[in-house]
Length: 131
Length: 347
Image (cartoon, rainbow over all chains, first blue to last red; front, side):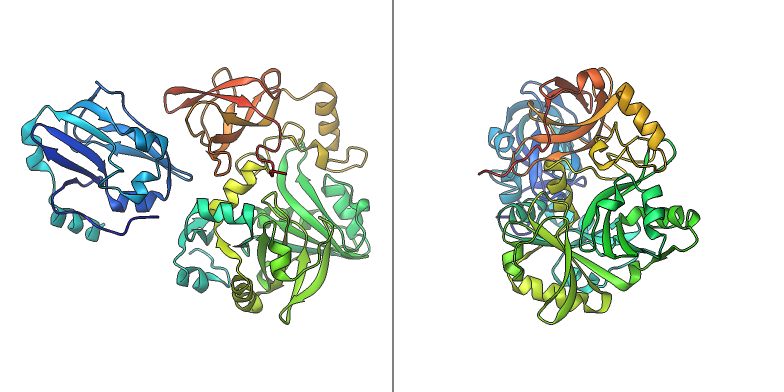
């Protein structure tokens, strides 16, 4: 079952359709409802290695639907602490619950100031309206 | 300006995602590629394929024109029969792969790929003989493919032999019922007058058939290894290397037959073969095969739940069971050459 459209207020957003949930110096990352809807049902998640570093605005992995491949753009820089194995095994989890069970990686942030450059839910929705 | 089929408004009303395809605005999916794919494998789905072209070839020398331009043996067709065949060029390459229907003694219908209708029409027109007339009648007809194990039952048709056609009606709408398709399932392709397409579509949906887009059409055909012209086959690949020797009657004379006989005798240098991934990865068109070769089509198989595709491989590396390595955006991913079809119905 696909989730219905939503952009939770407690998350921060990147204009490339990624979200971050910040908790202390750690952050959980994923893709937005808009991203999963545009791609369709996901069938593959090419995840980064635990221990690798990700950089803000750079690709850290890929998700694929039957028809398309999409880079995952990191909203923040840091070290990968954990990859969501549930999504590796069942990529459609992202379609079902993009902000919950469908998270993609957890990182330790290396640059605390970067969060200030991210968008609020209201600002991200404006990006979608203008697209 | 993209062209629209007579069913355009209905696709929009169903919430289809529309994409440009071969100059047409076509539905790529309604509910989703995977559920649509499974509906066709398990029950029945309907595709609007009105973008495909119809050419009529008529006259006392129609047979001679077709025998000289098409790879298969036209003389095997009685009125009521259909045949998969190729329009070949001088090098044995494929101008288009088409279905030829014999309508009556001196009249044939060719159903061609949307992107090649103009090319096939002018190819035949230039070679017209005295006593044969080639006409593009594409605008007159809509074409709906109804495919799946329950397709005939849902339409109320009795089972008939594949590659035959008959005239019939669906709730009063006159249709040419072709026992052909592009999914590997039992089914029909229904041609009707363009102005009746809406009513036919509504009737078919009312019978519980699931609307399906081009996305599912592509995954369905790839699971059963039907080549797609423009991806897997084309004018620069000869029919033998493309694995379509079975559609070439080399005892007849047609354009490129000499070349194809020579390639067959020598053995092709490369062959188009299906493969399945053993690593978790999805092959895509254009990816390189390590050691030589190229992926021409690739997707995730909804039924097998692994990456599948077709590739041209050096003949020595093209036998079923041979391992292959594909460069998936810089990462080496393993697969194995398979036999056709990749997907077979469970008994």
